[in-house]
Image 1 (cartoon, one colour):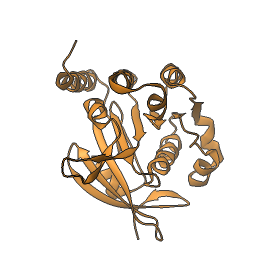
Image 2 (cartoon, rainbow, N blue to C red):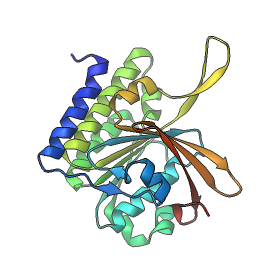
Image 3 (cartoon, rainbow, N blue to C red):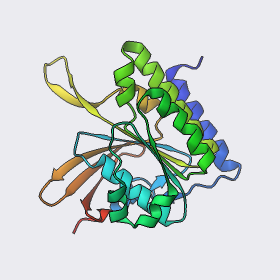
Length: 240
């Protein structure tokens, strides 16, 4: 069994081999030039992008914009909804109703539904696979070390799907307040130590100005950096 530190190296190695064998990277735009630049050109195929933040930080809205961008390019998308967040009317508002025909929707009520959705993603030939949210069902069904093991196993499957099917995988996740030795609570990604082993890129979102719909993104791996963007009725875009 691979050590945890080596698992990420192995996944990146497999990704590199996939690119060398002819699976050239493609990029799916977020709708914001600044956010795309932070991600190296947009959300990349062949990679797992982890997007986390507090409730209202824009995670699901970003996923909707990615779905719109992907399907407007003529590609297919799969949206795995574990928390009842998917809103087809919102995707239509950002793009148009025709794009919904190119989105396969999966409502996962249990972790087995979430895991089984990967086969649908493979069969559909999707270029974008979204899991919103990654850990909520695992949090309800598992506890202790077994929760970490189950999430890592699922993420490894998602990573292999991204590489072998040449699609972009985007997962969203929650944050929790974690106490420190000094007694001060810090915001940390839920199960972040496990998620970080398999995510190629990690993006923390936060709400900056609710009245203007302004948001802030921080890339944690790799490379580090920040971007600011807005979310309106037409989805993610540059700030005025």
